[in-house]
Image (cartoon, rainbow over the protein chains, first blue to last red):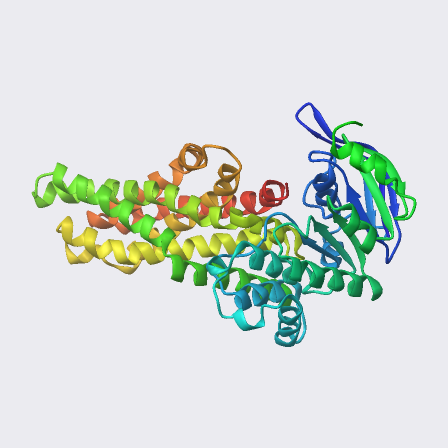
Length: 229
Length: 226
């Protein structure tokens, strides 16, 4: 499904990612973990074709998203920024993206995703007037609006309250059950173990560990967080 | 073709809707242009002849400087909350994105000129004959040149730290042929010279607009792609 071959990314003289090889199968839910600056966000951006790798190749369903624009339609991305227009309402933002993605019966789909993120009653409000947490929820709605087979979530739980975090976990589990390939970054080991079938540990741009949740060594993770690795 | 039109309409509609609520591009353009015109109006005597000879230069100086500030603002809204990334990630063709931003900017410029020109006309005590269809054509072609170059350079300037400073520095030297052609074309019309004198300037404006639209259209994907 997603294949990374010798991927490297350099910012100036600093390598954010070094010779990364990875194969992610269809329907997998994969968590990228690591300390700040480990290269998690850069990796997701490369997969989403938002930034080009300095070297190496990426294939999604056999095609390079940097070369073939059509494959981008099959990716959903929610990152640190919400990708929303503050002066448009909740509904107008989603309607705009529905038009770009050519979503049939857009109104019904918008209704559906707003229901999923609990923003149905606030559809007429301007995004600027929503709290950061609510904007984050709307950003998730935007990312799943076109039913993408590949969903990339960069720290999706940051800024969310406990109740919606649980709801989001259910949403991710449901999407994964329906066959969506999900790649997410998180600092929460418990969340990653609960949601994902595969946990990858990145450190200084290198892939250190690639394990199942059961086999993932909790001790290494906490040592890494304390800066002992 | 259907998808291209749908994307164009969605992008332009979105920009117009946001502008109708925030009004930041239009207000910037109009206020800056008016400030320049008012300053020059006080600098010259009310002598009609002197005013008329200086008017084309003042008009295009006002449009050039105000657009170099206003067009930057038009792109910066795409950068707030990373919306430009969502557009790059979406299935729209980067050329369509450029065309939509170009048309949106052109609409903003023409709209502001429509408000600003009557005030300019009154302040400089210009005769009625200057408000003619050919003047409209010169304004439209000049504005199209500004929009074509400004749309690309506002995306480049947005990536730099000194974005507000960077846009005029990058954009105005490239626009010298447009400013000269539009200024001279306007002078021919204001001074009621032979219409044949207007043709070379119109040709230059059309040529510049076409060449720079194509160049910027082709370069845009490389600018907004990263």
